[in-house]
Every structure is written in structure tokens, then in C-alpha cells.
Image 1 (cartoon, rainbow, N blue to C red):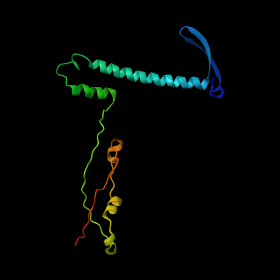
Image 2: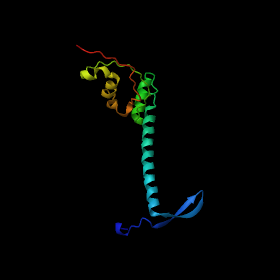
Image 3: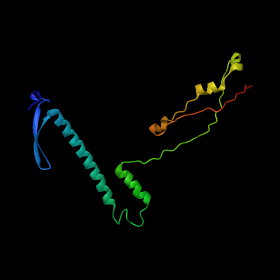
Image 4: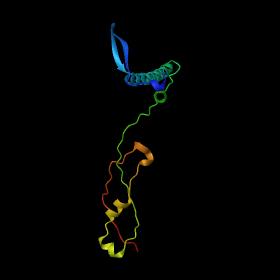
Length: 150
């Protein structure tokens, strides 16, 4: 069959044996292609899982993980490496940050100057350096005071 004669909507009859009972099921070519792709993916995942299990069982010897001098942390590190995982714990941090700001304010606006607004407009908290591992869920300005510098 060539690409020019390929018909994705062609119906194909397949023999299906389930618990000894034989039946003939009609499938569309595209449905069979999806089943084949799924089977290929499942096979790759199974091969990967079997390789990981093999690597783990190869460490389960009296010379390795069952050796009396083997430290638990060595075993856990090796498991993390084999399984390709990095277990984490979610923590919450509450911090108090003190900020000193110098700003030029027009004298005619000095009586109505709102330092809280200046801080909210000027300061941002960015956790992007840590990527998706850190979220700044909320931040709150408790109070701010100002005094004129001479």
C-alpha cells in the first residue's frame, strides 16, 4: 500500500479471542493506529519501569544496601537517582522585612504624602529566581512612617 492509496476510514475486520471465545470485530483504520500508538507508549513505559526495578534489585545485596555499614541516606540518594525523583516538602514562611526608602516629594504635596501608597507602588516581591518552586501568596504592609530629611 502506498500513501496515495491509504484510506484512514477503511474498515478492517480483526479476529478477537477473549476467554476462549472467538469474535470478529470491525475497526476503522484510524482507531487501530491510535491503539498501536498507545501500545508503543505503554511498551516504552513498561521497559523504563522494568529497568528501574532492575536497577533497584541489583542494589539489594549484602554488599550494597543490606551491608551493615550502608547508611540510610546513601540508599535514599540512590533510589532518588534511579527513580529520577526529588522529593520535597512544602513549607510556609512568614518574614518581616524592614525597608528604608529615600524619595523626592514636591513640597506642595508633602502635607498629603502617603508613604503606604509609595511603598505599595514601588516595592514588588519576586520569587521567579526560584522558578515554580516558590510562590509569594500574599504580602501585607503593616505600617510606614516618614520624616522630612534636612
